[in-house]
Amino acid sequence: MNKIRIFLVDDHAVVRDGLQMLLNAQSDMVVVGEAAEGNEALLKISHVQPDVVIMDLSMPNGRDGLPTTSEIIQNFPDIKVLILSMHDDQQSLFRALKVGASGFLLKSSLGQELVTAIRQVNSGQAYLHPNAQKKVIEHVFHDSGEEYNDSFDLLSEREKEIFSLVAKGYTNKETGELLKISPRTVETHKSKIMEKLQLSTRRDLVRFALKRGLLDN
Image 1 (cartoon, rainbow, N blue to C red):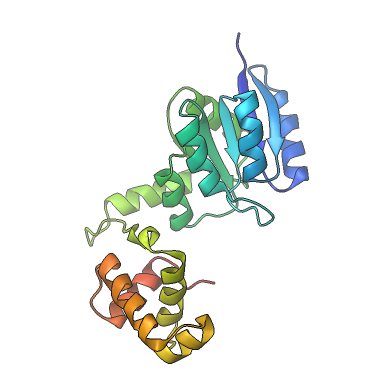
Image 2 (cartoon, rainbow, N blue to C red):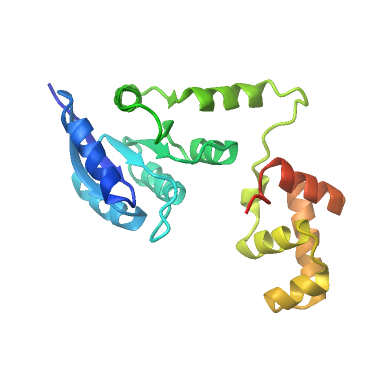
């Protein structure tokens, strides 16, 4: 019987060690490699060609999980990516699914659930932990009927910086001083932001930010 070949991506060695012990103990699984961040993972994955990649989302000392997942899916379409994260927010979930992850699981999940999830995504199915399933259902049947708006991803990094400051109440002059650009340039960026996000007023912009948890930090 061919074993499921698994690659681990997490910035904590203790997490990778624990996962190796759990997964190598399964008769149908073998861990074929590991990495502490995305760039290292992409290099190694191109050589070992795993069946399933277990991916952390947040890796401060290197490339994070979402862009790494996106590149894996683009370059190695047969490889399945299962997100294993401590983040339980809707934004992380939907962005992971958007870039092509086959599953989403919390690090607080029991070991047997991870084993089940790996088998399921390896067989071509999706796997979501119960809280994630609930979020998807709530999104689909949201009483407002409003679709999840991922247009924020269309903004450039500069536009995202300006969006954040404007949503927090900074004036054009204050924003310009912080970013070392003119107030007029700030206003030009604001107009483009409003157009891309299909918003009409600053109040709409603040509501957009609050609804999507973009002011949490």
